[in-house]
Every structure is written in C-alpha cells, then in structure tokens.
Image (cartoon, rainbow, N blue to C red; front, side, top):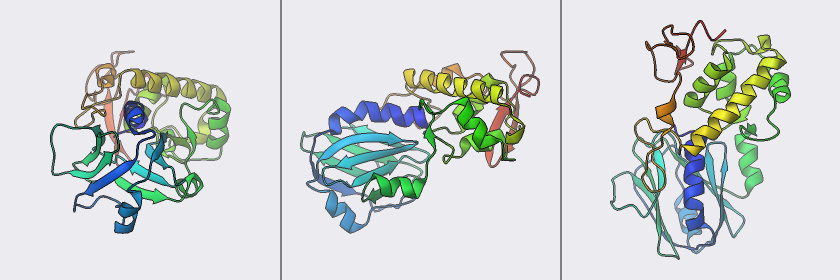
Length: 269
C-alpha cells in the first residue's frame, strides 16, 4: 500500500492544483525517509514551476520547467495532501505554491522516498519498470512470452514491478482469485488462454478500484483526506477463514515471499 489505484487517485485529484504553479518555498522535517533530498536539491526546487504530475507504476513524478523530475514514492503509509487542516509530526515535506496552496507529503511509517532525476530517461533507467497494468500493450501474449521461461510463482511475477508496473499485494490477490489461478502456480505452466483471462481481470479490477477511489485498510486517504471504498468489494483479500463467494469453501491464508496470499484451494488451480 498504496498501489496503482491509490497513487492514481491522488495524482488525478491533486494534479490541477500543481500544474503551472511555482514552488515559492519548501519546508522539510528532520526525520529520515527511505531516501531523502539533499540540502542542495531542496534549494534547487525553490522558484521552479511544476509542468505536470505523472504516475509511473507506484511512483509520482513532478515534471519541473527545468526538465528535471521530483519523484515521490508513498511507501507504506504515505499521502500527498492538499491544504490539510492540521500539522503532524510526520509531515516530511511541505510545498508552498504560488497559488497559495500547500501540498504536504505525510508518511507515518517513513518508508516513502523523495528523489531528484535529471530527466525521465534517468528515472526509467534506474527503475526499469515494466508495462503499466492498464496499458493497451499489456496483453495475454505479452504476459505469456514473459512467463514461459520462468519458474517463479505467478504471484511473485505479478508483484515484480519490472514485469507489470503498479500492482501490489491487494490487487494481485483479487486478480488471481477472479482468474481462478492459484498464487503458487508456476509461471511456465500457465498457457496463453489463461494469460488472456489474467490480463482481462487485471484491467477490470484496477479500473473498478479507481472508480471507488482505491482501498483503505488503515492509513490511505486521497489528497483531501477521504478514504477509498474498494475494500468493501473484496472477494478474497483479508478474508481468511470466511466462505468463498464462488464455492462456499473456506478461504485460506499463507505467507508467500513475506506477503499474505489469500486463496480458495478449490476455485484456484
């Protein structure tokens, strides 16, 4: 958390307030994040105008009029808030804009990241992200070509941002359930027909999550502090011990590469 739906919801909400505005001042906390801006980078941002705000995978990219980028990664509990009513101890960056608005990067658990890049090529070369999960180029054939020589589990494949950008644990669990694929299924055993089904549900579930403003389990809120609603429509995630909505058998939970996998052993082969 946050995953594609949450990051994109924040981007869409806050972009109109950033685009074309000049950064007239910034304030930073003394608390460390996973990566922080240097003092020189902080000074560099002052008097720069924001050309656009773009999402790439789970990253937010502020394009500056100088051509450089400010990358914001929300980590586990981060949020970008517009004109919040209160100041918190974990307000790591405050951007004061020429419009009078203030954008605050708040992150309680401090797994977020702030980085500067010379341009988008530098960013892409470092992150090496795969296709966006809503891209028209993400097809069953694309997935099948990547799977057929790999012996990792399909869940670990989908969680790897170098193959498909934007998905995280919540949406991967939901996608695999709707696709009737076990999270433990080995990649090179999956046929192209199943890959077409997988891509279909990736796009359907992410689009539904976007319409509902993302998922709030504990911390996530959008740019004005509103919670997402997709958690009210979970089929499998966080439902350990409850009845499967398809067959009625008990949903199971198992740790997989350090993350919880929720699955129905009857429906998901």
